[in-house]
Length: 552
Image (cartoon, rainbow, N blue to C red):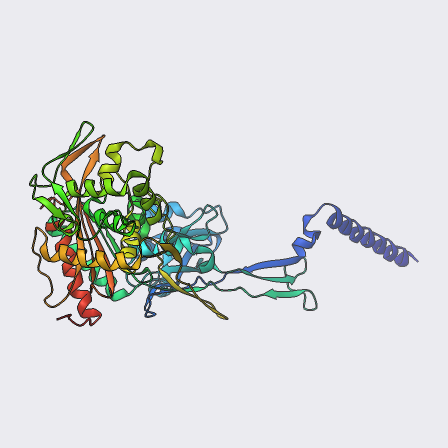
């Protein structure tokens, strides 16, 4: 009987304990919630790759590792530090400070390469482990830095694209994360017959660019040499197909390496080709001439009087060399880059139509190029313009544009008058579809007849300009130089200029259009002596690369 009573007491006590435990779990312990017995794990998608138009990889993914330490398993901390520090290229003091013995898990170093991981694993250190981390790698290093941008971290520590196509197409490149949901018991063990759900991740889409990596190599090499030769502070080269505004190459210096972007000054991340404002100088003149021709405000064989300086209010506008030829044709105005002649053409066009032409070309608005960081330039409201503003705009001073805006506008006057939106991505490719980015037409700037006339004028400008360049024999080339003084504290500094040249090959059916810009070249302030030779060096290389036959 006593044994039965004891057994009953034990049974009741056990029952009460189980009841109390269940009541506690149901009422007070958060582990009883659905969120805590259904374990959810995220599946990270792979970031899309980026390649040039010939599928040469420009941005890919690679696996690197994070080294961590579990202090309770390392045993002798001092011995661990002595053996591990050399492999991590850390001082023993620095490594020791990172290992907090009061914690269960400590991250010690990130960005560990597979080779370094293998070397550390050979040490057979207790309490040391590795976790995989996806890492962005750029095989061509800095060759296309401003075009690509880079992948950094957001505030939450997640990967995010910044600048270039990495920033502009970040959503498409990132993809959609997946998830695994599994029901588990209180000890965290999967329940075999419980909930088991999996939603696969959708990897990011690959980008195929319009960029030609060979063109990139040509223009960056030539730009680097030119900057060294002419002692320029900064430089940019843009190469496009003027018939659809596909960007074939874009390089600005100085730049950075996207793989190790954090080692460079943040000011270098900005792409000057789409973010820098500058006064284009005489490269702007062909657009004004084309607008006047298209509007029939002037005729190709018209002549203008170039007798001396032109007075606009309190300002005197002179030719660049203060020399005057009397009667000059429209073509001659471009050949000798006459500011006086351009003021006369602008007067024929009229202030209202001049301003409308600038708007039609797209100055003052972003081009819409698919690169993160573009600015829209600056075009003052027309009611804020003074007579001197209209006069100086005809020869590219007193107006702020971006290099890509110049390329967009100039391309239209040599391709038949078609304005296109510049773009650098040709295709978006995923596991299940392929999307070609269409060429986007933005209307017309001038008529087709005017385009043919202006091409011949620009050919004459190259052939009969004030400077004779080393042109490739047998090829018809059109273009225009530009030299603009830099405004400093409201005044122009004659010793600091922006030298540029914009040109195309061949004249009849342009295969490529190239804009070269050098900021503050010290060897010579003139675009004809710095940016133009850079253009012709690039043009020769591209003629060979594209196997363009001579015209003669």
